[in-house]
Length: 145
Image 1 (spheres, helix red, strand yellow):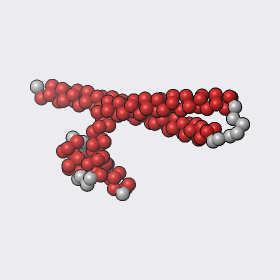
Image 2 (image 1 turned 90 degrees about the vertical axis):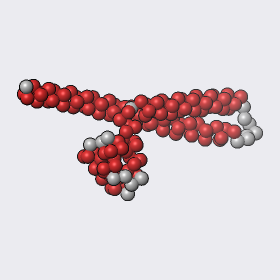
Image 3 (image 1 turned 180 degrees about the vertical axis):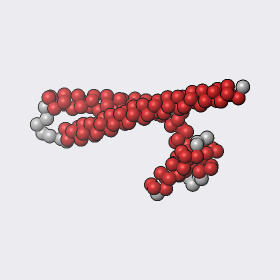
Image 4 (image 1 turned 180 degrees about the horizontal axis):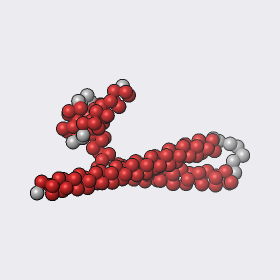
């Protein structure tokens, strides 16, 4: 009877570890996706800035402005509008991804608690973190400070 309890406990522990690994892998994939989206958003922002700069240069009054310049200006304005729409869409998607990952919410909350001076014990209690993870978060925060 005792042997069955030990075997059952070991099996439950193994399943819990497998679930934990799956959650960690999913969190990493989500983090990588968010990072790629942030890099794309940064590139779009830089491009929009360059386009706006060109637009300002074209808007400067010139005595010999012609139809081609006006057409180019209209195209640039359309590109800026498209880039702004895509930037807005990507920001919304990033927000959705951040809200979908329950692990990131937990660590985000823990990070805020550490920044406000929470102890290892408070992190363990409030965020249900293992002691090692709570100590790691506190240690990382102390290194930043």
